[in-house]
Image (tube, one colour):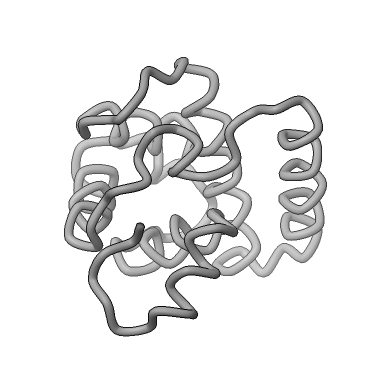
Length: 129
């Protein structure tokens, strides 16, 4: 549900490399698990996300926006992704809790461990490279 909504939004952006449908959906799974952890109060989702990231890395699968070719996105573009998902992708609203753009942005950033680290180091900058 949420994973495919993230995929659909990412396809609206220009990527620096071609990534497969399944790779984008795979990252979307990380975002959905982050949403379930933070909004659904599901602590198992957090553990599952950590295990999945380890598996992605083991098999050399993308686990970040940079891995998918979206490493040069600006915060405004991420916000546009969230707006698109919340307005144009009804499947995101099948999750058992309300999804708002702000929560999705937090989950998108939180699901991407590289991005989370960079934003915490460069707090206040609008570029997410």
